[in-house]
Image (cartoon, rainbow, N blue to C red; front, side, top):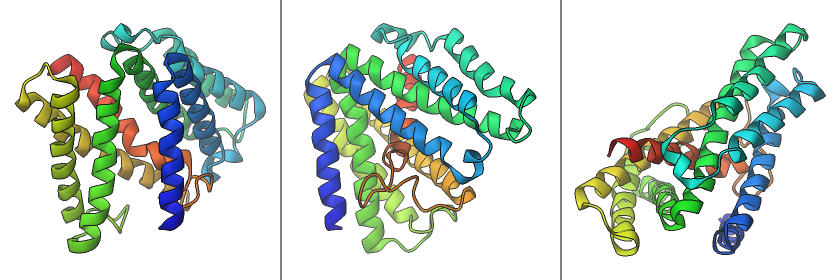
Length: 261
């Protein structure tokens, strides 16, 4: 627990530097996160032996392009660049024709995961340029969900949430959603304002729920690869993907809700 707290504090400080030093610093921070996450993806046991250098390079170029090519904040409401999606898709799929090891299942797995992460990190870059306090709102909801789900589940949790992640409980999940929604709503109304209470309560609940779905999705990938963590980069926390799994789904849901709520 001590290592987890120390590592968590360091992560928070690094994020704060990138967040408050301006858009350029934040883009650099996102770039570092992207590269570290990419390394964890290509070293997954079910993937690493099937990749060669050209595929790894093509994947990285497409991944970074998806994050940075369209970074004007107002493009958040228009969608991602079809050109970068096509480049990433071709870069991941076409090499299957020329490689015996790199099969279609692996190529589609790579495309799906890089597409999810690329969209999420791109959304973070764009949100930072529009209103960084909204970005912080999403992060607060996700972090509050994780923290309260852990503590409430540890004390009163008795019913398992999913076989994918046996330590998670229904009580912890519901407690995380309730606490995160309250905290997120108060933060949004106090710092950002200009919205109805019902809208922000509903948004907070949905972000919290989808954050937990993201956690389970990335846990499923770990289970399929027979690993406990994506890496040992962060002491007590695992890898980068272990830290941003919930945020990936939470941030993507927020961008979706922007167009319908």
